[in-house]
Image (cartoon, rainbow, N blue to C red; front, side):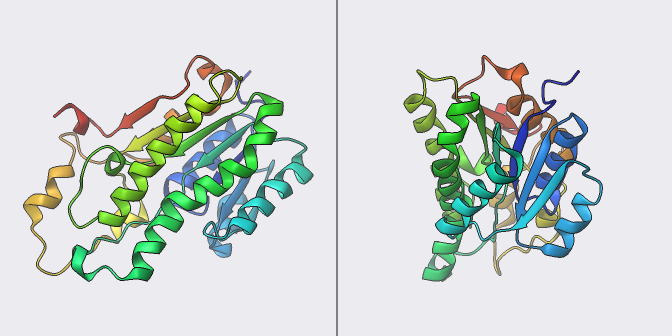
Length: 246
């Protein structure tokens, strides 16, 4: 019997990469999963193999859409036990070239969306002694070149995790974060360095063991989202194949 049997999980970024891996793994361990993303075609493909799941097209930059997604989950499944904020976006740019819209987009996807969902989900998580797993990045604990907006947002997500962990310390709600390093996802496969970039600076973030597979990081997230992690609260886990040991 799995520690996720009968649980209800909301997973963002569910249409590809790490988000899709989390959806599949949680489902295989008995959870009912509500996946949120913006790509209808890929969401449909992912959830074709998720018997106890459903999906919803959601713009995570919209606070109303986030609140509706949580309300929809409770209406459909009757409860929420885990909120897993996976969705993220990262485009490298020289800082002087970052437009206002690009800066706001970095924050909207990587920080604002998780906050809006946490805010809407917490009243329900209090009822179920549930938990939040925020997927940050090594960019949330260290600097990365050409990534000012992404680093700012991911550092903010780690800060949000710790702030909520303190605020809810006297409840049964748990809040934790996972900080992956490089992963073999479409986002990395489509990586484009800005013109004139210093690759020595970019490669400072590389792991000595290479990139992780999404399934490997998904296993850590599934553990934190399950009752097996009942003693884990306010933790920030590196899943970076040894990068943080340097």
